Image 1 (cartoon, rainbow, N blue to C red):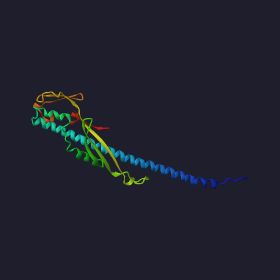
Image 2 (tube, rainbow, N blue to C red):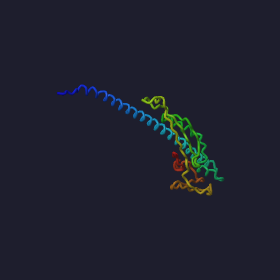
Image 3 (cartoon, helix red, strand yellow):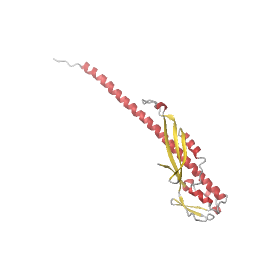
Image 4 (cartoon, rainbow, N blue to C red):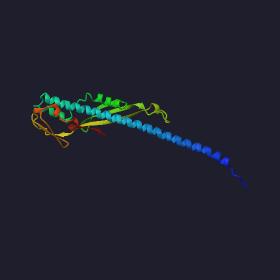
Length: 205
């Protein structure tokens, strides 16, 4: 009678099991490394988006303040105050600082900042790098690798008005379907709508 060696089969199966387990472990660690990198990239992009939007929002606040000051100071006869509604008069002095603050809130730093134009509208391009690294993984160098990203935000006026209107009389604005009136002859800065009513701030592709 022929005998089957169970011990021999078990002995040959064990190395195969160890080999397959090693492959599965390596694949799992590789997926984990890619997931770490993706999380870092997403964090960097979120920081860049927030920083660019903060820069544009700071300019929007500047425009609103400039509009109020121009009316209060009586720049009416020449219609200078109307120019603030176009969005062209923002100098962006505080934009970079606002971008840096939001990047820091997202554990990142600004590595590049540029005021630019997007289809004729003022915008800001911000580049950031995370303060944290991708972290240890099976891929060499990730423990010192920082994620980087950039974003571009644009500031657009939302209101249409008659540019030939008498700047000393109440001005009717159509702000994306919302009616807004500004009366320079009976003006209170508190009567101005929120900056988001007069100007939109959005990311540009």
